[in-house]
Length: 136
Image 1 (cartoon, rainbow, N blue to C red):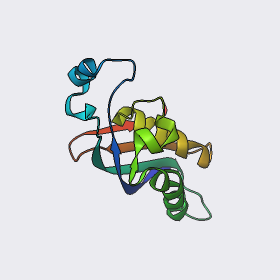
Image 2: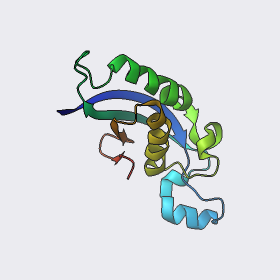
Image 3: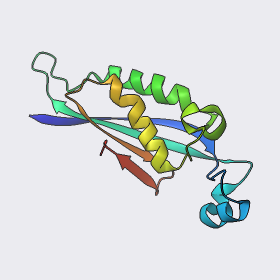
């Protein structure tokens, strides 16, 4: 029997959407206000869902404390109150769009979990705009 358990987390971060190889005008045309050279911020909400078999001994798919600690060390500590473009190495040459952020988050968490567990990461940039990634 496969069950999905989820943990919600939160972090605040600033970013700027732009490409170094484009002119300011082209960046402005494509990214609009998100191309602000002084950056802008979001209050991100994150949901990490883990799917797997229920362990017959513990009754858990994953110990939620373990999942909480992974999210804290890999994501919250690395991203919270940071400028993603400047302070987070993964975005040195990667535009920190919601789509790219969710893939980076997935890639930071996936190796910390047992291989027999499936994972889906959902990132809310705003209450109405969110993206999901499950490794495909």
